[in-house]
Image 1: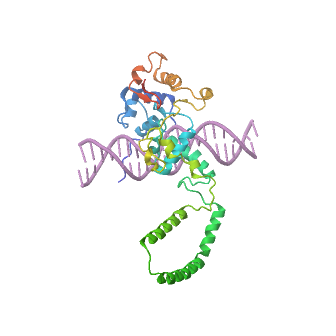
Image 2 (image 1 turned 90 degrees about the horizontal axis):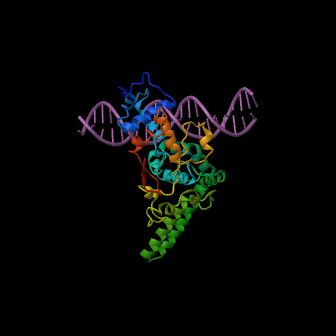
Image 3 (image 1 turned 30 degrees about the horizontal axis):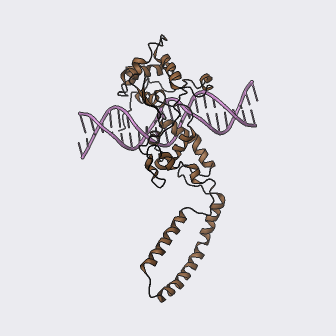
Length: 299
DNA sequence: AAACAGACCAACCGCTTCCAG
DNA sequence: TCTGGAAGCGGTTGGTCTGTT
């Protein structure tokens, strides 16, 4: 027995949302808040599935969304967070105010992946990708392995003969040799002969620089998990919200502040009669925003 | 100017997780 | 503790845009 569909799909509309639908959804949520998404379409007069409404709201209509390409700083954060969290886009998005998981996922797949590959880094593992020369060396090492094994065995035999002749071995010396082994293994994990195209520190955000504002005492030796619960500062907090991608008038003005641009759009969307005085106030007053370099603000 | 290919991204699908009863 | 519904999440799809031939 299969699972019941999230909604009765008969007669439901799919595909891109129209301005009219957006307007209905925004009006409804501003008046009633986010309640049971399943009920939203009926109550808002939409022929959409609740899930679709939720996605449209969270990914596109939410007033606190940032729009436009990710900044270089945000991109670095995404890379750093991805190295720690993997494809947990919502977790990553939670560290980037105003960005959605969908947006970050798309940006990762279309931009960052390519950049990392160009840099010789595997976007999934964040490790250096094998270059042809390195692959050749690896193969060669494997071919030489049996011969080396034989040589090692012979050497070991000689060493054992010498060791048996040595009557006193201090604990300190034993520890030293153990530590030496460990360091050898550590080197194995990153082949120093394989000169990377890009040094790791050139790609990843240094933890110490990232944490300075919120946790000034942390050091670069700490786990990058310090990102957990961390607030990041100094983001651009501007919006370039265009309902239509084709409306390039606003785009050409570069970043237009949320308050000029967003409110205008919202006025249009929430008022049939275009009376801007009526507009947002009573509806939006419930929303509180918070720029990182500012006090919380209200509509 | 037309055809095509690749890039981009909004939206969908289906699985997982959460939570109330 | 179990169950079923709702929400959350990540992978994928498909339409549109843009650049190239």
